[in-house]
Image (cartoon, rainbow, N blue to C red; front, side, top):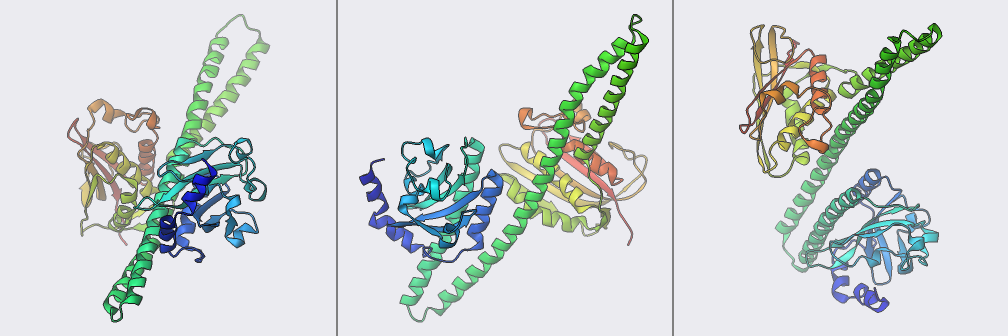
Length: 449
C-alpha cells in the first residue's frame, strides 16, 4: 500500500465525518464493547484485544483488554504505532504472523512499545462502506492464525459494528432532538429504547455465561472421553499379547512373573480408563426440587442462540407438571445435547418441538432403554422433522463413540445423556423413522413436596 494512498484514505473527509457521527471518540469505556473484547481474548487465547477507531492523526481505543501501560490508561497512540490503519478493505482480515519479519511492519514502534508481534485485524465497516477502524487481536509471540480463529473474530467484529451503529443512531436522534424544540415524545421514545437495550444487554450477558458454561462442560467431557478412547486402544493389544505369552509353555516361571506384572499394570490402567469414561458421561449430582417448565423456559432463550436461525422452536408446557429432584446443570446438558442433535437432523431448517407432560409408567410401558420403576414421571420430549433413524442406529445411539456425523461428531453426547438419566433414576424412549423425524422422550420421577 502506497503511503500517499493510505494518507488519503485516513484523511478522507467523508470517512472522518462518519467516524465523528458515532460520537465514540474520547468517550468512556462501555461494558458492551469490553465484553466483546473479553470474549475475543478468552476464545482466541491471546493477551490483547482492541476496538480501534482511526482518527486523522491518532488511533483511539474504545475498548482495550490486556494493553500494557501507559497505553491502557491513555487509550490512544499516534498513527505511527498503528497496524489497524492498514485495514482498509471491507471484509478482508489483516493477518500478520511475525511483524518483525514483515516488510511493511518490521520498523513500526508498536513492536517495541506495545509488544505487537502477531496481529489479526478485522475492518469495522459502516453500511455506507466507510472503514472506521478495526477489531483486532494481538499476541506478543509469533503465531499462525487459524481459520476458526479468524471466523470467531469476524463474528465479534460484526457485533462491535452493531453496537457502533446503535450509538450512531442514538447520537443522530439526540442531535435532531436538540434542533427541534418541543419533540418531547421523541425523547421519551429514545429513552425507552435505551432502557430496552440495556435490559437486552443484561439478558444477553447472562445467556452468554450460561452458553459458555454449557460448552465448557461439553468440552471437558469430549476431552476426557477422547483421551480414554485413545488410551484404551493402546491397552487392548498390550493385554492381548500378555494373554498370548502366558499360554506359551516354553516360558520360564520368572518370565511369567514379569508378564503377570504387566497384566496387573494394564488392568489398573484399564480401571483408570473406565473412570475417565464415567467422568465424561456424568458429574457429581447436586439435586434439588426443579420445575421442568421453568427449566425449559430458561433454556429456550439459551437454545435460540445455539441453533441456526432457520430452526423454528415450538414450546408446549403442561400446567399439570410436578417438580422433580434433579441437578439443574446435568439436565441442561441433556437439553443441550438432544436439542442440538435435533437441529443437526434438519440442516435445511424445520421445526423443533419441546414439550412437557405428566405420565404414569409401569412395567408394561414399552420402548424404554432402562428398567421402568412404576410411578409418576415428568416427561420432557424434544422432537424434530428431520432425517430420522433406522432401527439399527437406534439400537446403538447410546454407545460411546458411535456417531452418524462423521468427523464432526464425537459419539459422546448421547452417551452422556444416557448416564445422566440413569443417575437420576429416569428413563428414555425414542420414536423415530427414517425421513419422518425423531421424538426423544426423557422421563424423570416426580417428587412430592
